[in-house]
Structure formats: C-alpha cells, structure tokens
Length: 328
Image (cartoon, rainbow, N blue to C red; front, top):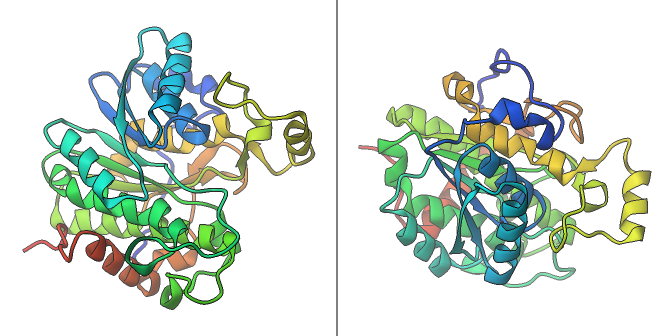
C-alpha cells in the first residue's frame, strides 16, 4: 500500500463551516494565487469565498462565464476587498485544460483545487474521452491533463494539488479493470469510480512528488455528504426549493451543508502544517458524512497499486503518452 498513516492533525481542528473559520484562516492566503475549478456553485463557491476572505487571489476556473460572474458578484458582496478572476475551463475538454494551463503557466500558482465535476450523472452511458464515459472524462480526465500541463510548477514551487474525492468511494466498489464502464454502467457507479480515480491519482502523485524531492504536494480531501438543502442560501448560487430544504432537514443527522463540506479543501490549501506530514494526506469529516475536518483514511482501493497503476496509465494517456512525473 502506498499510504503512510498520519500521527496527528497539525494544530487544532478547523471549525465546522467556512464562516466560523474566518479568524483561523485570516491572512493565510495573502500573496497567494488559488485556482478553483467549478467555482461558480456548491462546494466550489464556498471554497472560493473562504479563500478570498483569507486574502488569496482566487481564479474561478469555470465552464460558464455568466455563472462565474454571478459567483464573483456574490463573493464581492461579502468580501469587498476580494481579488477574483474568471478563467475558462471545461473539465470534460482536453483543449480547455490546455487553454487554462497556457493562461496559468507564466504565473505562480499556490493551490489548484480540482473541484469541478458531474454530480447529477446520466442514467445511461454517454461516450467521453478516449473511449471512457462522460463522468470519468469530466471528473478526472480533464483535470489529469491540466495537472500534466502544469507539472513543472510542482518542481519549482510548493504548489498544492487538492483533489476532491468522495465518501462514495467507500460505498461503491471500484473495478480497476472496468474504469471505462463498458459493461455494468450505473449512474452512481460512474460517479463513485470517477471520484475513486481522482482520489487514487491525488494520493499516488503525492508519493511521486516525495520520491522526486519536489516541493509540491498533492492532498486528497472529501467533503462528506454535503447537500444544497442544508447549505446557507446565496442568491443566484444556492436557492434550494422548499422540498429540498425539507429533504435536507430530514437528513440532517448524517448530512451537512456545502458551506461545511468546503472546509476540507480550504484547510488543505491554507494549513501550513500539512506540508510537514508524510505522503498520502487525506482530509475528511470526523464522522465520515459530516463533522469537523480531520485526518482520515481513504478508501482502501484508492490507496493501493491495483487501482493507482491503471489510473496513472490513464493520466499518462490524457497527456499524450507523456509522464511528466517519471523522473530521470
């Protein structure tokens, strides 16, 4: 297993939501640039809001510019001094990943938060990149190309990749021999396997970076069971219907809001003490589906070479046969 258990969380545990951590994170983002994919809604919005309030320059890397601009407006309404910027990124497109990388290549980037993804997955298999289905393409393959294009940045700067995994990786078995889901496609399975791929890649990359003695880190997180119905309302961003609110309340014993689930990614991006921990850092809610963020144990499948090896092969394929982390 490519995993080293961590002895303890560096410092006190963060509070349960992004708002209650304002003092904890104040100033930790000063002078830093953080890129958040899929930043216009949900976890991405609350992550961007918290990073901006911490002083970071936040690049909202989104597919839809109008929605990103609405998110920027709402963040500035709450953080007037926020430093924000939109960049185009469609995580289901290799060309879009290359375009975003070209925009970022000349800049110093301190964190890349791979948040964009497809949650409401199609009922039937839809074709995606390299013969994989569309959920794997959107949730992993596009990010894999973006990381590959920016690989040099991990060698000359302590850039952190924050890969958003999911508790679904514990609830649904991943078949390393059927990552393309050519047989046995189910919508939930597609989501779980795509998140398992991103999670396994993130953990594996951290080990590679350590072996190369590069200053970059790759930290995996999961947000628990975070739903819109329990999230703080934000105009044009999160406006759940009465039925969603009611459903949220009925699930509140084991679910939380997205303003709570976002704490994992923000903490991974800003906590300086995490850099001193061994490889394989994984952050998640204390009670798996909800609770204060702490060090957690990733699903066994995502920690082992049986899954990590084919996922890494897919990463190389997404980068046209090039492995920028191979070393000499």
